[in-house]
Length: 327
Ligand code: AMP
Figure 1 (cartoon, rainbow, N blue to C red):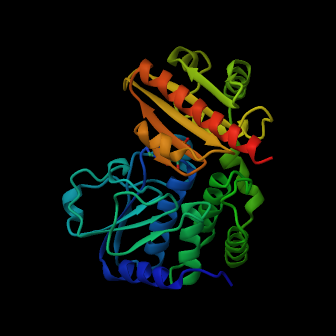
Figure 2 (cartoon, rainbow, N blue to C red; figure 1 turned 60 degrees about the vertical axis):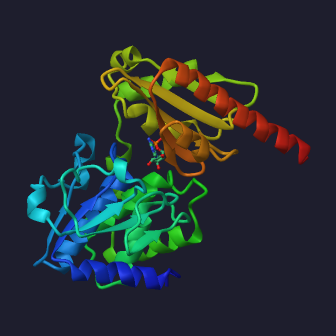
């Protein structure tokens, strides 16, 4: 059995049971964990309580349509609802809740806590993904599971843990996955195409990154990607973030970042990964945040790009110096 924080799981279930109207939301620019957890929780609540009105909101992403369709709502119809926020700790990054007069907010998330705090809050930084937490919730309460819900949760877990590679992967992750597969009889190997199917253009773009990434003597790998390059390779602004984990395990690189120009919104979208220094504190100085070793930021000028790269390199230098003196 999964050793989990039963108290908070019970409280989460009680809150769900209490409300007739429920809106489930997640962060802007969603990844598979955010999309899959939102749709899986909505579908499980619908299956368990058919009389409730429960929706999952936020902008749809066509390449994630396998997970399910998101709901378009009139916010007035959901006045006084319970808002469940998944995979995001800051209210200004929650997608699709403009004009929603909710009664209470409840967060379920694996990021470090920030400003969202409802009467019931389940934050577990040790969880590899929000999907792992939703799977725990469903497995430990009367919430129902079917094969589609299990498949969504499985893909969210596999994606956010980068195929069980990242350090957030624990024995509990494997326990949850084991219980999920056993309870749903999921044919999980048939699902990988939904996660890993990609175009030849994307593979070529990965080659472009490999050929052009600069690496400093302190072990910072970085690349500023102009919008022309995104166009030339027929990829989109989310592609660099999708590819960033593929640059793990490079001997010369401790921290790596892709800084992508978004001309339309006059911003640079930044993805950062580390297998050394903690990076989310630096990310928060650049309008970002995230996990200790996987963060994102938004930068608004070329000058800020320069200072961001300098700051990140200084962090790598400090880490390198400390590592050498510990030898
Ligand atoms: P990404 O590189 O886009 O995959 O993001 C890595 C992690 O950082 C994820 O957990 C995101 O939710 C988080 N993140 C990305 N961008 C931001 C931002 N602007 N503010 C706060 N957190 C972010």
